[in-house]
Amino acid sequence: MRKHIVAGNWKMNNGLIQTETLISELKQQEKTSDAEVMIAPTFTNLWHAFQSTRQDDIEVIAQNMHFAEDGAYTGEVSAGMLKSIGIQTVILGHSERRAYFKETDESLAKKVSTALAHNMRIVFCFGEELSDRKAGNEEIVVENQIKKALFHLDASAFKAIILAYEPVWAIGTGETASPEQAQDMHAFIRKTLMNKYGEITSDEVSILYGGSVKPNNAKEIFSKPDVDGGLIGGASLKAEDFYAIVNAF
Image (tube, rainbow, N blue to C red; front, side, top):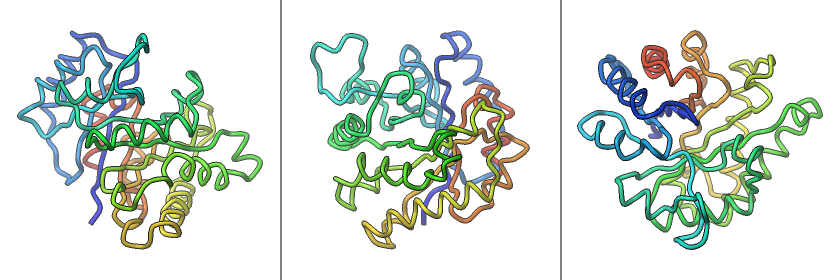
């Protein structure tokens, strides 16, 4: 049975003091659901966050990594470096990485392979822009992103992969994605996996929704049969809001 997962992506927010405060507040929240909880602080605070949550039901994960093992890649962080401080899971392919840092499906395929070679779990992000949705090309875009970055893998690799669908057009644009639209795309994603790897694999993969999930809409979104959790941005920076989403299951 696939897992319910709620992952908080803190992005480029919170220095050390703010990280300490937010983690302390997260620890004080009551968890009433079966959801697996993840938080992704900045690179500079990963070690501290990991040490601070070792005894808690919270996994600290990374926001990104490079595909190379080491070398002349100024400003980058490798899988081995993440593993050396206890980090076991990494977000790859986030829409902001694709948009601002020009990450491609081909470079992400390399990152995926490197992370798996280091026995890391992956939260793999993908999703269409507003222009794609308005043109009716959302399924084509999503299918291509999945195929180009992941379909070089064996079915067994998907035991370590969590998918995260981000409708980029519904994040900070004023446009709104309905729970029905989320379900429709998640069902399409699962069907795409099934066509390549079979029903057993597709049924076991958790698919998270990353389209501005908040406390007031999480329960309805999470009630959809193919939505297994959320990749949370802004709401993950407030402990009470984040756990309201965690407990929406």
